[in-house]
Amino acid sequence: MYLLLALLLNALALIITSKIVPGFMLSDYGSALLAAVVLGVINTFIKPVLLFLTAPLNFLTLGLFTFVVNAIVLVMTDTVIDGMKIDHFWPTAILAALVLSIVSTILSMVLQDLNILGSGKKRR
Image (cartoon, rainbow, N blue to C red; front, top):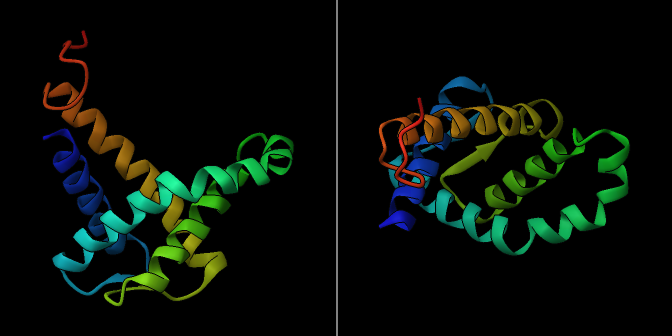
């Protein structure tokens, strides 16, 4: 159940990001769901390797290089999904990575406050 909820949450975050960031487009809701699946697989298997390889640069930038790694992951997802389009790497993918991180965090916090997602404890 948690995996399905996380998938829907990521798809919703991708849809919201596509509405906010110009140049980042999803053709339909099915593409958003498929992109969420592919993004989850890439985040699970490839992103840790990228973070390990870029650890010194990430350390020097105080963690800000993580947004570049997230942008690379988004571009990798874009190459796999036909219904997803990122116009340019630097302006679009970096901004989309930043917005996607913020939107995902906000959605997760809302679901935790509603006691739908998380440890089951209500924050005060």
